[in-house]
Image (tube, rainbow, N blue to C red; front, side):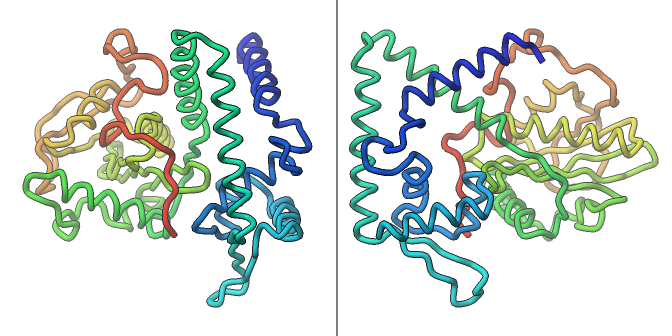
Length: 327
């Protein structure tokens, strides 16, 4: 790791914490630190389960409990156990809590406006654009890839969203019952592997690998949730699947795709895959690709790809805000 890059990141972090008042014991002069203020915001109008808050904010259960107890003592939050499962706790805002969140929203808007007011129009535009780029890069770095059983709840959710999108995008529609090229069994070790992408504890993408021969693997089910597109999730999933394929002893990777998924075509071509003749009987496939492992993909300059988080194509296209999945 470049020591100068590390130094710049640390300097940036110090500047941000000072600018937004993260070090103040009374954040925005409302009598509580930033951690409690942020938790109020995350609980929001709809309320939230404690475990969801823990995943979203990356907090350990003990610290989250202390924050919730403090907000309860202040009369801002009510925490109740779920009727169906006493182990689950749900936090909701009280009327006083709603008023406090509204006050924070107003003060936060004023703080943001004060930062922009000190700059001329050109510098203001540069700052906002730079902040957008930094946010995308930080979110991209926060995505975690993990091997997951394809029958797990989060894996099933991703696959359901994936199938729904295929049904919408394919001219001929899509029926999972007619696509028998990737069963749960052949996406489970030792026959295959299923990789799940999560952002802030929520599933935002998936990809799978199955064995079709002694040295041949096939990539399946590569998908990114719309809210996470533009974060290079599909590109990272593809690289992880290639690494898993190498570990399984594959020399060649194959994949198929539908003609409607033009973004996926671009992703595969940039990753070094070449188009080949039909190699399976998938009724929804119209293009087939292959790559010998160890083959070098085109460089960003050679492929015309812009370096950074927005380079390459994430199936299926680019999206916007971080995903929070309804539970």
